[in-house]
Image 1 (cartoon, helix red, strand yellow):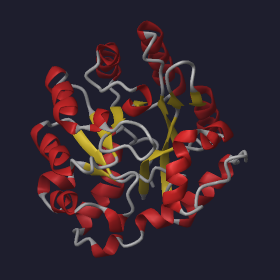
Image 2 (cartoon, rainbow, N blue to C red):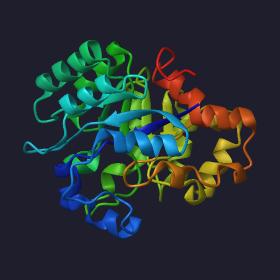
Image 3 (cartoon, rainbow, N blue to C red):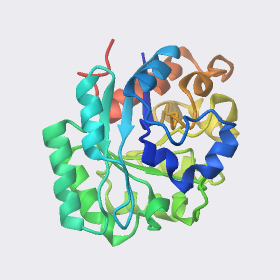
Length: 279
């Protein structure tokens, strides 16, 4: 059974945003048309084609009222396909108390399994004080904080994606906080691996990278006992389709146990999906 820990069902306003212009060039037209409303069934079909059983759908929010995929929309899709999806909440960093209450509501009332904030969208690294009440609430709720590391594919500044110092400092300040770092950290992948080795609750997901493009530093880590427990599969769908993301998995030289942990076991443990993402 395979779990995709970073995907989004795209709204038309998400697809139209200028941040995706560079990604459209890279994906060669594989993404949905920017003027279309994509039915949730299309996302389910992409998963089915690659035998991906379960996915975490992300909401997207940025500053100045930028609402690309709302928590309400994610909650609706999850309610329609509860055996296929769980939600990752978004919040408004500029309204700290409202953000904390929104996170609490989504986890307790709608069953969301984590918080995702994309730092480049806000222009704020994870060490900014506006994140810290949310980190405390994630610990209290027992859910991970999910974020992006590495350079920024959209035409935005990349500095906020550095694993060192940002993820390292957050993990030092909040050792109980589970942090899932998406997009492998390239070109600072060695830094990302070092931070994941150092901190028991820091993890890496492979979203935005196909299997054949995973950096060598990450693959070496995945072949170790520690790394086998620390890396989770993700696609960043619809930027990368599920079949495309998984192609070449058998060529990585991973043991059967490591493959199972990568595709399923780590996600179930980290996001507490035992009652949801099980065969």
